[in-house]
Length: 490
Image (cartoon, rainbow, N blue to C red; front, side, top):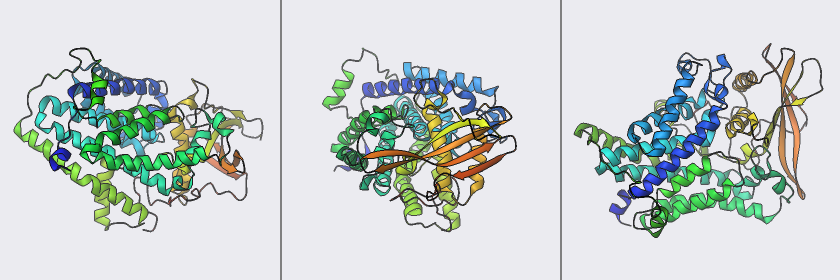
């Protein structure tokens, strides 16, 4: 393997322009979908939103700032799509994506919109770096592309390794999401199949092994494109089965950054583009000190990237912490850049779903069901809402001994549900199970929330089931605090 080929990957200007445009279109779709839910997603709890009512949060999460933020964000997405003022537009978009999808991860029950939000941010960062270096520092373009490719590869490696240890290796994970009404587009179809159907076992093995294999191929220059294409094909298949919003499209864009200019595939993707589609006009070069600082930042991130992921796995799997000062610095760094263990779509997230109801405070019935995951314009159809509901109740598994975190988050969420003063909000927890020949959805717990007095009454509907326990085969353990993979007592 040539070191020069590894350090200096290339992508054609035409293909990059196509990927940038595709990201712009997906970004516009993301913003349009979120805008309909904007009061909840982008305001603080003071105005009926999901964000904490903190002074720094409310600088942007308020009714006056929100329309301005939305206008700037839409304008940036439009400029990225049509290829105008792309450096400034991508910088503005990156700042907004970072704030809402990374910085706000621990300050709102939306949790940064989970993996779809993170990939929107990741594509924003890739777009800014590629546009900046292409137009103002072409000598650093290949370094920026190397960073983008390595970061993507480590995301896939992290996701694949975690899946392999969280049930997929033993045939548990993907099938629960496919039959889960919160996540599966075709949940009724797959729900009629036997859990022992070999299709599910094969899909689980492919889900983790292809991500690991692709990650390995992505760092070998002659094989980079094939690693990227594995992810492209995989997420095309996932997109028709699982409700993940624009996540699949963003991952596909990431997979295509590995296509080299000399490949036949590059020709297939770009030969149909109109003349002048790729605007290669160079701007004023960065001043030497700025170019040096940018190069230093890019290489620092590249060198630190494998160390950061290794540190996350050390905290989580070895159940060990670094020395206190080192651990604090390490967590500041990983949280700054949104570096995480990708626990997306493991059984701890897919083996349950939540239905939301209203009922009179002083009566057991009737329950009026609010949640409808299939109705097109339903609040609960949006992937961000499903992520929010799921994240509320995985809190019970992540911090089983710290009920205050769960209580604060559920109360804040419940206040966003319109209801009368004499009504309570009821969350019913359904466990997804595999029995002989069929899948079952069993109600196992109920949480009755009275927002007027701030109480939550938890009631078990099945004595032997513990909603705070991780799923079988899961490596999950109680976390010390949000934003850390250090276990309690480590």
